Image: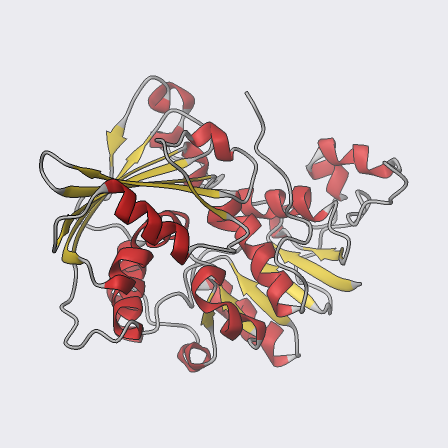
Length: 357
């Protein structure tokens, strides 16, 4: 058993980690922090956790509902850091310094270029030295590196959906560098902090685009698209021209990303689907399907559904990518990364299907 701490457990990603780790057979949560709730028990902050006091199916939960929140994490084998950017890096410096393996759910270590981080996040990087050893936490791309790391940067939710949609065709070099990504997300992606745009009366029965001049997940997408193209042996890879347009939807969870690309040669849908099926063969959490996915299909699960097809009238490739922003887009992917860090099978504690309806 590995001891686990969750830094900022009162966030949506922290609460989702609690839900998923409660049934994890190898991780036991022994430390939780939340400065505004320090001194309270978990079941006082999240009353639904009182159910964990009961023994279910002959197994004791890996989360103790009577665990008391503290301001700083105790010493554990592994830490999930759910703090905002900048604050996360400051906490991680301490955690890594005392030998704790870390999965960071903030944006502080996703971008390899310090200048890009400072351009998009408008702040000097708090710990640039750690960028040398941090690994981008997309198991479908960096599985071996994650297994050897001490610090894993969990990808952004939009970035995960888009990158998984784009990796196979950019690795194969069969598309032009111009890409349009139209992405739609539920309101939980904005976190628990109160904002006018996520109030019920503002978000309900409404759809709107936001961050239209540039979303912070865009440089992640560009970084990984270029890297996979270079890894595929392509020389002089042009910088992709990506238009990324996120939209806020009146739903709690889910992301649907629709990616539009131009093929270099005329291909049929069957050709592209075969390429995707081969690229993701054996991947436990990516499913290449033959119909347009629904966000409901991923609700509460760590799966990503991908549907590529060619519009034969225009010759344009369209790729749909669908996931739960709080699971495969955040906490579930963090546990997948933690499993790799600790030498466990990636599906450990994650083999659940989506809630329906």
